[in-house]
Image (cartoon, rainbow, N blue to C red; front, side, top):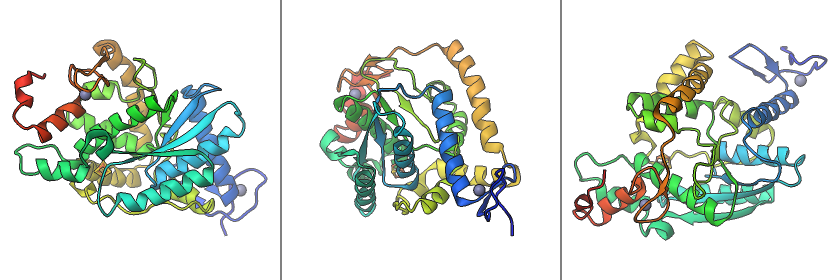
Length: 320
Ligand code: SF4
Ligand code: ZN
Ligand code: ZN
């Protein structure tokens, strides 16, 4: 029987980290899990002692885990306030189920909970948008549309709810995938502003990712030990994303060469400072259509929405 490697703990191990061969019993694993998130938060100075923090929860494993881990850490910081928000993109047969888990977990964590939908904010659901743009040549993939509109919806909600920070459940695997995706798409500008934890504009609420050092497979383990339920169904659009291919590629690499994901993240952190020095911090202004923060005259969300809703007029606006 393999034993937990923690000093003076002789309990039976239930997990062995492929990264360093360290074995954990259930208690030592949860303690280690929380400690690692705390370290990430403090090393990156993610929160102030009296922040009102909005946790963006989808109902899936990552965000639900984040909510409960922050709730555990929050006990030692009585001036911090946590709230949870779910963005309902309008994905039939998927979002309804996830919403139940999001609501249930917000109740379990005893935090204020709100739902903001694409339909309310933009007058159109993701399903409707995808159906409208599907026939167009070179139209954006559902995940690209969803990502842009969801980021904007999260920022709008954060502004309206008066929070200081938005915390999202992105884990180590997500971060490595995003870095690689941006490199493959040559989107260096996006890469430079990937971790926008500094407030660059009053209307742009900084986002932080406290799980960025947590490998994805460890999240369901934590939820299993702590008996936290989550939505375990894949979004029907997920297969269309280039991210899915990158996820599979990185999964193979990590299996063959443990530490690959940390390598990507740490390399990125080193080059990001240089990138920001070279590209400078892009000025944030308010979009001429929706008055939300944007690096362009008209934000990407408005360009997507205008294109889908009033096809034809959009191109006459000479939008860059
Ligand atoms: Fe949105 Fe794509 Fe995620 Fe589905 S898989 S919720 S479409 S980003
Ligand atoms: Zn132990
Ligand atoms: Zn706009």
